[in-house]
Length: 222
Image 1 (spheres, rainbow, N blue to C red):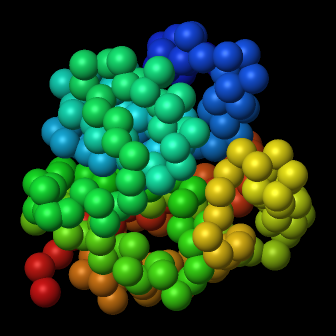
Image 2: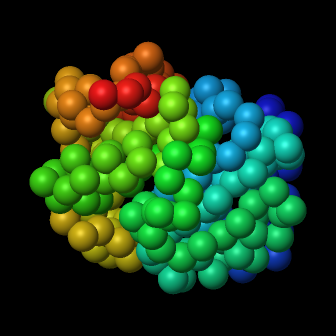
């Protein structure tokens, strides 16, 4: 680990039990979250499906002037997030879903960040989820969507095994619809259908054992 932001973010979780700190450290090294942070604008950002709040912590230490709203429906993870980034002045932690941020924050956010959430939902709910994200954004606001793509390779099959372990054995992750990985083309099409202009599709799998991909999409008017 060489990035000072990573070190600072890990310090945010220093009061958590060792098991949770190890989980957060593993998450940091297994996912390219700084690639999301590097594309995030200043201003108001929602971290949807925040889990323990690692992405929220990285966004905050990268730019303390940002205002981060971290939300997740998992009560256990929100409890840890409150003891971690929830102590930062720039971070507000809420239990709930993306829909729970409406109508209060509709049209007010500069960005919505979503890291590894869609694949836990039934595919039929993806359209609704993306539409809910769009409602929260200002005109030309950004949706930063980091997912694992369905792309037949050893990384893809390794990811399936790993997620089964996390969801069904260790129960670190909750799912409402199985493990639904999709090709990047499917996600791009869905973003366009729901009122986004796709500005970048970044393959972030290099250096990782998971086929990570990041979609940077800008809210456009119909």
